[in-house]
Image 1 (cartoon, helix red, strand yellow):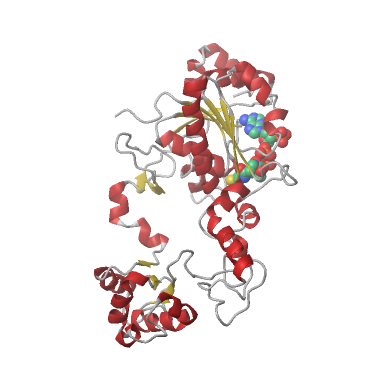
Image 2: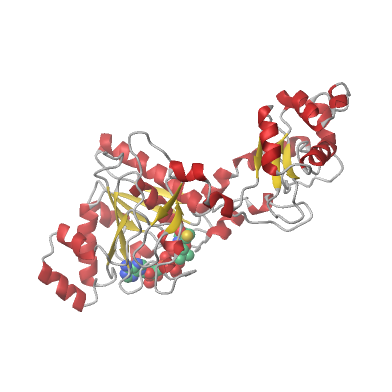
Length: 415
Ligand code: COA
């Protein structure tokens, strides 16, 4: 089957997580992704958090599927010449170096345009232009600088970072969209452009609803769906909302049967107004249907704590799956807290390719998250990540280098 990005060549200068997430997605959509790595060591994550001695880590393998790897010392003169050929050969250069690295290598935007005016140069940086643009940034720095940490956690605790890698993988996703849009625009203009996704911007975009709440708070001094309402105090900034729903329907996490032993015996419960009658029926509070303190969504807002305590008194008598089955019968929105252990073995996720088992010559079979984006006419087949420099000879041959050239390049440690 032809793939959506067949024929697109990506010069992948990315490392760690944010950039590799982006180029992995493009590879899954069919692009030929050529990952350029330092000879000898490669992407630093190959060695980080290793669980099998001598084998590329899961950190690396799970972010670099479907790519080809070439080793190249891009600081050497001969390495720069090869890089120049790669710039001519490819459509998109993707990088997430610290600010200034590409310029120091001699590949400024101006120079790249001279070599290949159709080239798109896509970058992840920690911050956009401004006081912090020179800073190096990792995931949790972005979560803190983008508003996520300040709004995550409990009112009486410190800011919290989340397990979802919204700074790295989230920004990689934003960048991938920018690249695809730039490729589309190039069809009309014939020219490349720069694409920038700053991690702070990406996190803030994903925290958009919190900027909504900031403005509501400034206007009304209170956020009625937050757990601080009605008895707690609001300051001038949006507070941490614990497990309150971020939308117009109140929700929270409630305990289920076995919570004393199982840290994941919990359920997210949404007290959606259109099914209030069903909720009262299921939890045995029919009297609330006619009680003016509970009959309308507005009346319930100051009493959400009482509502969820009653819900929990019911859910603790059921496992999360029993509760979910009953609630779904009544169209009451809810979600079980699923652990990574449970997700890894979920047959439905295996069937759709969202969880895949991949074989690797050095580490054997391992699980990965497959492509979460499904295109009906461009099906993803997940291939294992490349070994360091596995495709160096193949790629250099495509660039016109003869076998004898490769021997001398190797002897000079350029590749
Ligand atoms: N051959 C020779 N040198 C190479 C090379 C190659 N193939 N690939 C990279 N290098 C060099 C670069 O030229 C650079 O050298 P220089 O600083 O002397 O110019 C150096 O390796 C490493 O670059 P840098 O990006 O600074 O790596 P780092 O490990 O110090 O910092 C980050 C890592 C992630 C903090 C930094 O890259 C960064 O802030 N990136 C942008 C934000 C980002 O993506 N963060 C999330 C990461 S998941």
